[in-house]
Length: 152
Image (cartoon, rainbow, N blue to C red; front, top):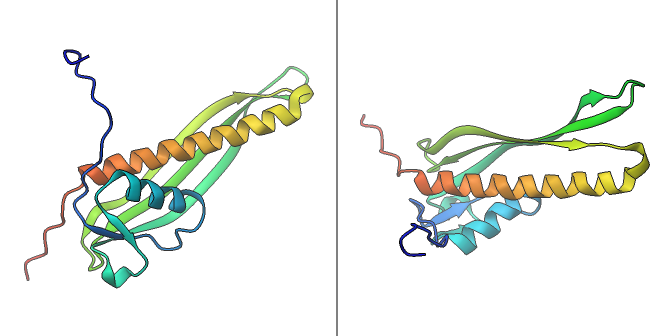
């Protein structure tokens, strides 16, 4: 194992000590809060004034698009799309991470005879995509650098 370069994912180092996430009570905001507290040295605070950085979520959108139809006009495949836009600032206008949009897609087959199973699969895929997005955002935060104040 030592020679192959494998290394367990440890704690990520982010360029701030405290972070404020507005409305981190549900969805991806809550997942981000939990993962930042568990996987970094940063603490999530409940007051923007007490935070070194502010993570703003501009949009979280889940879409289900028809991808293909059978010869009789019934749906054969769907494309699930999950999009999140976010930005991390220092609260004074400088960006740790500029406004960024992350989008994931998954294709899923569909059958009228397995409606309940396919609905459960869809929900599972959306939860999976949310976890993937959280990990992508955490990796982006770990690669961010402290903003340089503008010289006046």
